[in-house]
Length: 135
Image 1: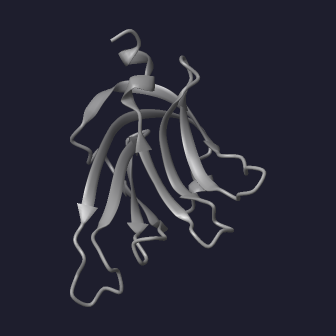
Image 2: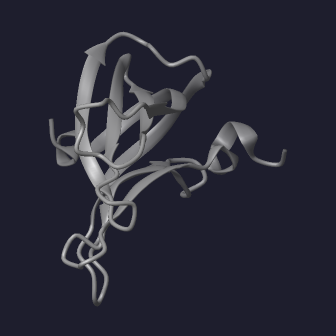
């Protein structure tokens, strides 16, 4: 599954952060971060490739039917859009933008894909959701 497959209007109902432990036979040098989020009743899991500790990137995005996140909240309408490239960097990042506040709630992917030091992005900003406005 590719990030751009999720572009469009959705309802976000849950987000969890996690870690995947490095296995003995893994080429990873450390544990990998993960981020699970539920859109329209399907749960997506993004997994980091921690590479060598200086560079990282998003390794994979998988989908499972059903809500598998533990941090749940009432449905929030979000517009999923691919982040635009910067003047000096290329991005492969999906931003989920709250349709009421216009602010980025969740970002997942890889920044600086054209650089020697790409960076995995897995950010959740619950304060930007409409239900948290003013709290």
